[in-house]
Image 1 (cartoon, each protein chain N blue to C red):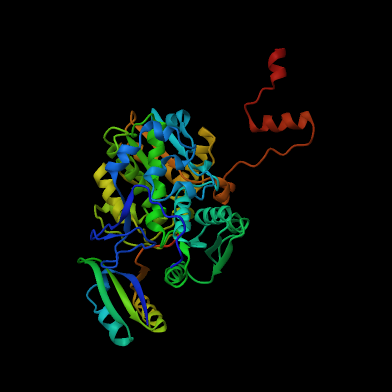
Image 2 (cartoon, rainbow over the protein chains, first blue to last red):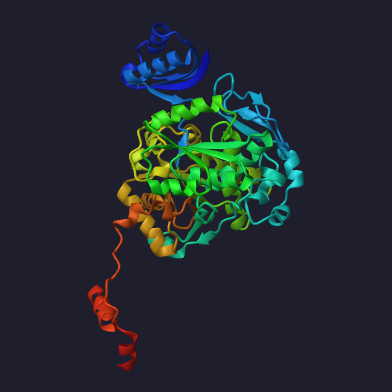
Length: 80
Length: 428
């Protein structure tokens, strides 16, 4: 089992969708929210995912394909 | 976890979460276990105040290690390629162009690998060796990779540098020459980000801006210290700083605040302004919208060294901007080029694109009345232009092409216009 800490940033049109619930249900991943800030027009959630690495990767690809931005919790790592 | 070597932390007492305030020991960790917020070094300022004076600093080396007592590592074992204590230059000609009477340039092009990254990497590398790491690593498109590679070479450590596979060859040379192992990753920028985040937990390496980040970022404070010392132990009225992750900007502010806390300067009244390229301006966009919430963007600008679409310290930068009364400016790529050329033409400093962003951003802020004509202003030039020559190469006048004769030379000068040979002038 692996753990991965990620930040999801939701565009306005996806804020009301139960994407984190679906992520846990469709893939064999435990989702554990630690910090979040959601308003009417945007939202972000910092959470930990636990599961097999391949499941986590498939799950994150699915979330990104939905239109949610997925980043490491520490922001961009590639610096100039 | 590797076996630690020499461990001395000076006046640093631990790490603390910037979000929930939980305390942690000085370990190679970077996020809070509870809320995943970023960790920051803390110090015993009372003890530091008793040990540090202007004189003790002035007696130190002509590098950023003169401020070793204010950093979270052991200076005696520093991995030191002589970063810092770069020139602070009075910029009269540029100031006249911009309408500023007291403009200074902090020229960090003068660092050993030609950018301010040497400041952060020397601290991260020193701390990494204290922790017992044998390998330094980073993901970078340029300056950071160069600095990590050079510091690893100096210390005899191994270096792994992850780069996007479509990076221009010229950008790679400045790292490869030091013997670093370069890993060109096929995939998007986001893929490289995610891969490096996963590798941090998998390999016993010091990723300088990931698991060393609480120490790495402290190196940027020295820019604030130096500017104050070079101004005669006073804080400037206004700073203008390039914004990428926002860390540099926040730490310059922290550096000035610490000097005041240590009674080395009077209270800080400095306005902190920041500049970004319009093609990647999540921090300035949030500032203009009056919100502390950053919307991540996909970067599209020639200012690659500032192309951080999801800035780790963006929120904290916005707080400093609000607290200090500073402003944000975003400039188009054409203005970036114009800024580079203006700086070079007036002050003899060839900066990389981030320097162009700062100079054109400053011009905008002056025009908008956000920077006062009589303020003591410091513009931070954080990297040298030789690394990004392509940004200006096509806009510069070509050489005058001549035959090896005086007639041809004078013909060419005449064609250029406005020339009178000295000999002809004397004869008349």
